[in-house]
Image 1 (tube, rainbow, N blue to C red):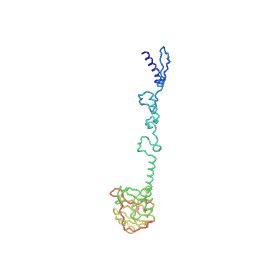
Image 2: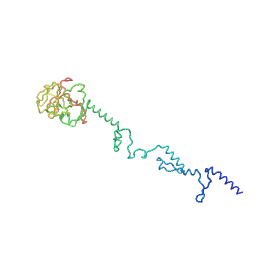
Image 3: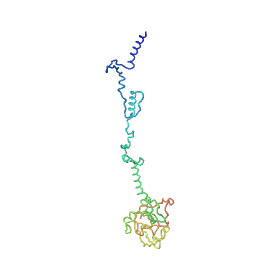
Image 4: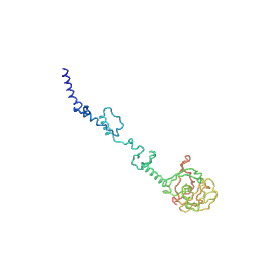
Length: 304
């Protein structure tokens, strides 16, 4: 009968509900005269648990599969991702200190200096070593020089640049007649203290033991005219004969009438010599060695 079938279906439905929705409390509570059925425990728990929102997950869109799933997704994300700074992950938003590199010199540069212009410790060492090697090279091997006057014209003009080597006189032999040398002038009544710190460039015309004089516009060494092939013009002065002392040389400029040299302040001690000019490198059209001195100059001792 319909009534029996209806009762059987109701009983079956009542038995299956606990299995689907969990235990349901059938107790009724009377609140203000209205009876209400208490909610299943699972429903109460799902309402009580709120999504866990960490800094790493703030701002993410919540999934559309319910709050319980949002808890799982957000918690997994916070566990798999490493913690980051609040400044976007680079540790420097312009307000805090720049992250250190471990190099004190590099980190000491102000922030406004471009990274390409900042020197680190290795750069400083490289600069210092290069500077030290350069100084050692100039002091012991060779150095460039600039011609500031016309005292050696026509061999050297103003602005010419040359290389002066420093090995020959130190290890091989003393200056020979005809060598072009760079030196500090000696302290004499004709030279001031400040002038002795300057670097001059002149030609060696005589060495220790030679007799030097200037007459009739020409230089004579041991009675023989010397150097007229390279001089600019005849000398307009005379110089009495004098013997070059031991350990000294006699130097003169090729521009005889425009040179502050030994005919004014006397012989030059060898210890004042800095080096020997060996070739010109500027201007490019003058690149090369220096003119040869007359070959008829007699040989001189290697050391005197």
